[in-house]
Length: 261
Image (cartoon, rainbow, N blue to C red):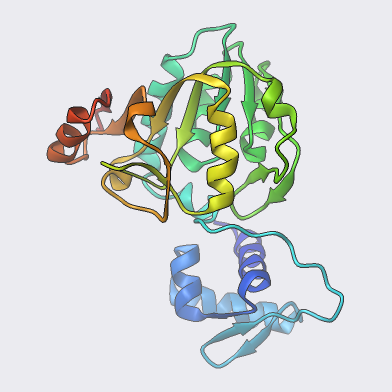
């Protein structure tokens, strides 16, 4: 991750919680303690933050604007985790698309990787991922639709708090979804606003295809998005525990496994 990107993420985190320890920032940004300490020193010298013992504090002033936040990993951090597996899963997901189809793709690091393989395709795509939308607009001739709403920069997505928006007018054959975890109870997410937004998307699609690398299997998050009987296909990688795959298949989930080199 570039220094400028880390600095922006630090500002976003401090905008949300006003104080963050070095330890918390190393976990959130998946960076070394030495890197974070250098970042905090530089940002303090530039008067972007207040560096204090053990961490940093926001320099919010009265009347400053607080940006909206939701729970969940930062997109730039998630994109670097399990990247080889996510790329192969994304490639397999695009193989399930046919030119001329209308599809929905939710925001996430695995679904973002679909952009590379959609470059030569001709589809109509609704996505709430502004980073994927930018990738598709710049590098493909796919028709791209974005819903209205607030931009959540850390997660790279657009979410609307309103029921009436462009989503309700879209009809898709398939929805491709990243997730923070999938367990026997269902597909999970980290924030209630994400649940609301993704359930709106899901209502407009005939099939649900989940993209989840092996680290997401049997990983529980705070909220259940949907039960397993709504999942038409799960695509994961060959590092997945066969016992977990078997449990999901017993619950009626079709599972495709991509082989890692």
